[in-house]
View 1: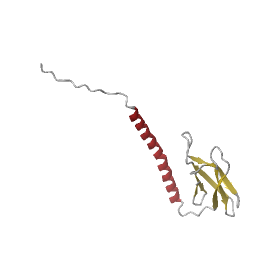
View 2: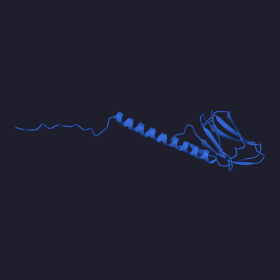
View 3: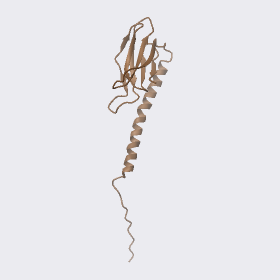
View 4: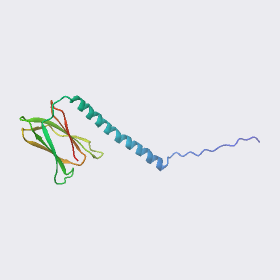
Length: 143
């Protein structure tokens, strides 16, 4: 009898829990890396476009107040020019929930000469980007 032995291979259609967890972690890390690269590229593009623009006539100060649901810090923007200034304010959150956008745009604000506007509810690490037509943007980091 010249029978060849049959080799039985055992296949497991379900991957081990460790492999599933590893795959999920790799996907999560990849998803987190993409937004940070996009934001860095946008910031670099904005900075190069406004490289020769005049400085924004605004002073900024970070103030700590009472803790709120969104954060205990605020940024006070003071118009140092002799004219009203229309500014756009974008808040880049250091920590955002999954359902929340990391960049929060505030409605355009008009700051009268010598007056101030406050951006409330900030947390440590948040960035406030202030821009106005004809001026280089100003970025304030809450530290």
